[in-house]
Image (cartoon, rainbow, N blue to C red):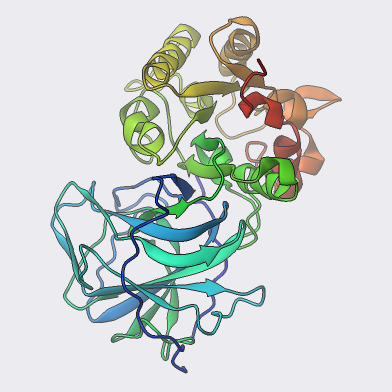
Length: 405
């Protein structure tokens, strides 16, 4: 599976203005919500996005898009899947303009319990202090991390810029090179002036955005978030992407199975109110492997477990039908029969708090077992940019609105 594209990088020379700011106390009402998320991933050599990376005396910069507005942010760093502690000598954030340049005067130092340095124990996350930084919905944010000592982060791979030495406040980092590697930040939380649903898109590569244009924010969750941001009725809403390429419900794929990562990657997301569940095609595609055979009934039982656990935490689950995959490398008639049975249950089984019919949105009218050829890049499995737009258009905001009394 192809790893999720992350917003294009502004790289590379002159120092950015603005001194470090003291930590903020937050927004006063505890209204923190995830504005961006990436599921932690343990690098496994030989798998896509799985090559470990070691940083030493280097600054690593990532640019990402925050999908809800607020007056302060804080960062969650991950070492939950690491094999050794990670020491970080400094972190800065800055806003990024439409041309990919850091906004002068927006640089802020991030602190941890008031200090610049951070030590992340093996198996743990680390939450920063609040950073006073007004941010708009769909604003791109640069996060720069300085590793003074040798460190091997275990994190989801993103598009990074890596530069020698400490260049945290540089508007353009000297000697920077691009790298697709582990990005230690797993969540950006935003102190929102308005409350609204926090929607976690939980799934595999089709949620992550595989085969979309890199750096253009074209996954279906990102396109849905853009649609919400254009409508004042949905101010304060947030959509975050917990997709993981190759993910399966019941067995390991590229990363832990969905049942194993649900708590960390969905239920623990800051402010979560809803999960959109699109999982199962990789279980179905690999249904007859000796070490991971599954049945439609087992896929459905996995859905039941996810809904039960989510409801116990007060989180609603919206079920999404599985896209057509005829012509894909792992298509079989037996797998297609399973997909049809699972989709019939999603639509009519009464398990979910709502249903999104992604199958209908993506299917070829001339052959509904296939993705519409206009909506896929040729692998007959993943959508292209237009395909992800069709999925986003199929999502009704009414699914996430509180019932009127």
